[in-house]
Image 1 (cartoon, rainbow, N blue to C red):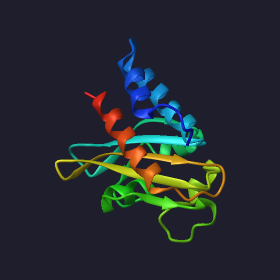
Image 2 (cartoon, one colour; image 1 turned 90 degrees about the vertical axis):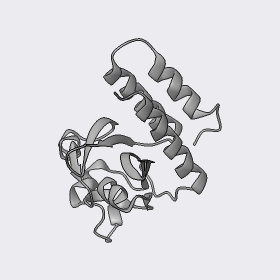
Image 3 (cartoon, rainbow, N blue to C red; image 1 turned 30 degrees about the vertical axis):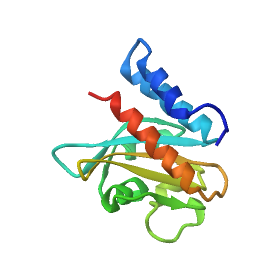
Length: 159
């Protein structure tokens, strides 16, 4: 992560700009990816009626993966497992993972080091934020906490 000014302040400024909410969320996701030198970044929120994650914004996913990531059941894939466990899920190398957490199609992202963090409100998961790098990577506790703060800022923009 770049040692620059606090990313949450930059995200807040992006989200307060004029214009379409979808465009502002895309810009915020792109900023997160840039700050973490990530190839991909995804932001999901939970749906009220089902234990599903709904893709709100993403950068870097191939179209076929973006379609699959549109609605993720709790317990499926990294984001779904993160939501189910209510804790961060990390992989040093998604390409060689044999835990069964990452789905085979996830290899199409060309991501290796990946992390997904949950955002909890009133003791339930309301969102997940994930990033993936193009090389093997072990995320630090500080990076994970920073991502959780980013998810919290992103949620403030949603109706």
